[in-house]
Each structure stands twice: as C-alpha cells, then as structure tokens.
Length: 328
Figure 1 (cartoon, rainbow, N blue to C red):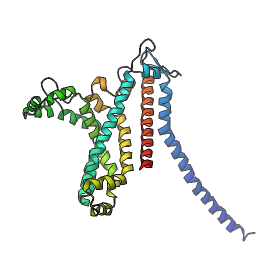
Figure 2: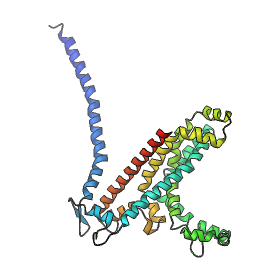
Figure 3: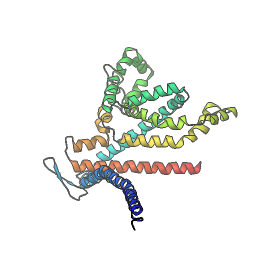
Figure 4: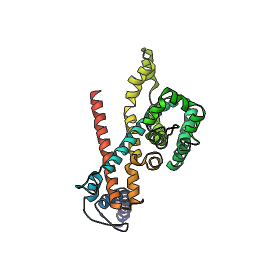
C-alpha cells in the first residue's frame, strides 16, 4: 500500500494541475466573452430600449414602449394632420454623402496604391509611415484645414479671383454653371457651403484608410500575371481591366463598404460644409441628444434607423456582389 500511494498522489497532483490548466483558459474565455458582450451589445440594447421611451418636459425622459419617435421620423410629429419628411431627407443625405465620398476615395486611392506598390521597398515604407501618421489627425483638425483652404477670403476662391480664373469662367459661361451647382455667388466662386466641399472633405478624411486597406492586396499581386498579359500583347488598360481588377475585386468592395459605414456617422465635416437643409442624420442625432432639442428617445430612434439603413445597404451590396460573381 505504501509502495502504491506516492505514485497515486503524484498522479493525482498532476491531474489536478492539468485540470486547473484546462479550466484557466475556459475561465479566461468566459470573462472575455462577458466583457465583449457588456461593452458591445449592452450599449446597442440600451439605445434600442431608449428609442421607445418618452420625452418629459424639462430635458428628461422616461422608459416606455411607444412608437411615437419612429412615427415622427417617417411622417412627422403632427401626422395625420400634417406630414413632413425632414428626417427622411436627412437620412437620404447621409447615404448620398457616404456613397459618393467612399466611391471617390476608393477611385483615387486605387491608382495611387497601385503605383506605390511598384516603387522600391524603402519608398513604400516611407509612404506607409506618412499615411499612418496622417491617421493621428482628428476630424476636427482636418476640417479646420479644409475650412481655411476653401474659405472665400483667404482660400482657393481668392486665388481663383486674383489669378483671373474667375473672370475667365464668367467669359466662357462656366460661372453660370457653377452658380447652378451652388458653387458660386453673383461675384465669385465659393465652396462653402456646398455638396462639393462636403463630399471632398469626407473623401479626404477616409482616403488614407482606403490606401492602407488596398495596399496588402495590391502588394501581394503576382507580377508574373501582368507580365504574362503584356507579353501576350495586352495594353496597360487591358491588363488593369482583365488581370488586376478581378484579382483585387473583393478587397476593393470590402474597402468601399467599410468606408461607407464609417462615413455614415461623420459629424464635423457635415456641420461645417453642408447647408442646413442638406445636413445628415448624424447631425440630427447629436442635436437631439446633446444639442438644442434634448430629446434622447428621438435621438436614439434616429440612431437605430441609421444603423438599420447601413445594414440594409451592406446587405444589398452583398447581394449585388454575389450576383456579379455568379454572372462572372
């Protein structure tokens, strides 16, 4: 008995340590999942619950279960006596600005990233470091810089006026076209406030992200594929259309979707460069939660609708991509 006990004790100690080593990762994963659910899911649930709440005069609100906030969003607070589509219009401009700015960023970032990946490794590293450094700039700082650049007195409109470009535009008739587009007043070219300045600033805001997201796919592209196409007599555009673009189709679409979702919530650029009648739902959400109206349930309802709209757009985009893939 005494000869058997020590090994049994040793084996029991070893099995105990092994059980503890097995349980520790399980405990760690459990804590990690609880933490993730608490930080990611609970805020969404609270926003959804608050969206059904009621506003109380005096800037307070109470839990409830009413669809008045959603009714106000789609048809106005005075429906059925009167109908207004103010917040649907803001939702439209949210999607419109995000789609155009994301597409513009991808369209301009793709050729830049393509030529960057053809450079030496040292040059690529310098560009990547520079682009990563630009990500440290806040939206407020970027918008302030563009605000100065596009200002009527000291920015690009002043340069166009002093160099005679504005007079040339008036002589050729392009000045009237710019006035119809809201980019000129009776005397000079203006960029604030306009859809052009809004989209341009939003696109610039996400442009470094587009380059960084496209860089891995383009840098891993096998050069022998393009060389083989050129050897067979294909021109640069044919090589780009038939070899490069199909090879990076998924990263391109993924980058476009990611930038679109990011731009749906842009706030500072829209408040500075967009006309009040053409501002987005993100501005309206802030006004309801922290601005002049102080109506947290209505702000939460707008946030939920913006979230659902983004999800629907991504779902439709995924269906379109799948159909294109099947057709191809």
